[in-house]
Length: 99
Image 1 (cartoon, rainbow, N blue to C red):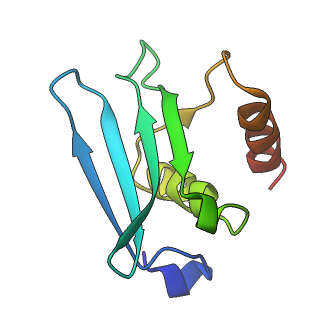
Image 2 (tube, rainbow, N blue to C red):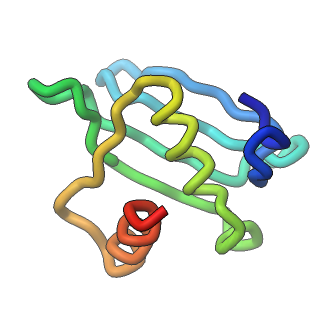
Image 3 (cartoon, rainbow, N blue to C red):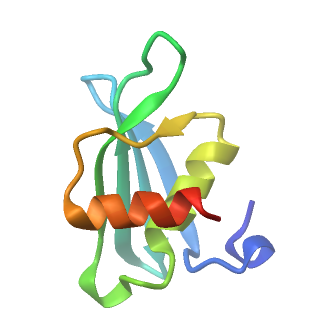
């Protein structure tokens, strides 16, 4: 998958796992890291709840977090929204669910 295939903002991304079993998706535009999506270890159903989502202030509102979500979905990571969310997190989750 490339950003141009989906007309999305990221030019590059990486996926890795930390020592606690969390999966990290890091998005870049050029050489700049502009977004991070961290997913918890899979639950009994294979779903990974969002642990953290972050987008650089300069890049908010153009789909960086949504692009990372799409990458997680297409990479069979089975992302799921956590039930504990900030107000911004609730708004983003609702926007993602309505696409």
